[in-house]
Image (cartoon, rainbow, N blue to C red; front, side, top):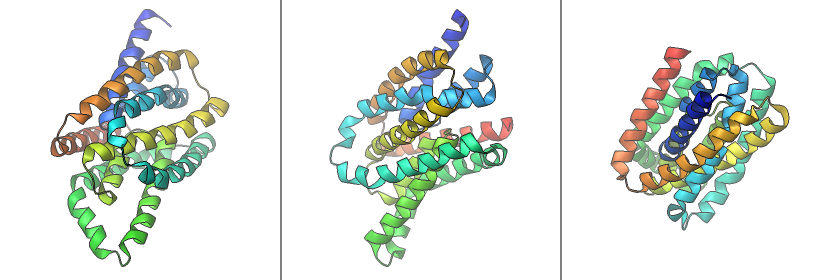
Length: 252
């Protein structure tokens, strides 16, 4: 790689890691950078997933204080996330992606709507559940499963989708929900990484550059998110998600 390409990918990795830690959607920074560097689209997509994994790990490290007291909650959804990621990885490696790419922007817009109206929707879920705890768990697990399938298959906007879903069912500060989202992102992307490393056309030189930068970006992004008020973070995430969806529609 030329020094210019290294600089492009390193800068994209740093920004993508930070954005993933705060809101999700960092793939829309690093994926176009890989395309601009000359990698074919499928190889760029697979390489992007592998390369951003350290950034998710960094975001978990940066937000570890917000994970205190969430061990039981995490165990309840981590296995579901892994199973969904297996399904999403198989879809990416064995089926054409054109149809799914058409619906990706609308999934992101749905996630933005869920997050924007999270307080009202959370009350509605509680009020309409015949057995609040049991139905709460079933709905949460189902939504996390679908989010994990999506995340392993494409990944862009996964954080927005997870944050919107978790925000409905979990009554907690958005910063703590965001920290949980980061852990689930690690689980989902770890499964995808193993599948793509074994069976996908990964460009390992590009992975090394982006992964190193995204690790630093993820750690810094998680620390920044801790200092943002919940309402401000919600507005920022929704706004960013709408932009992500608009970019995907415009370039689709």
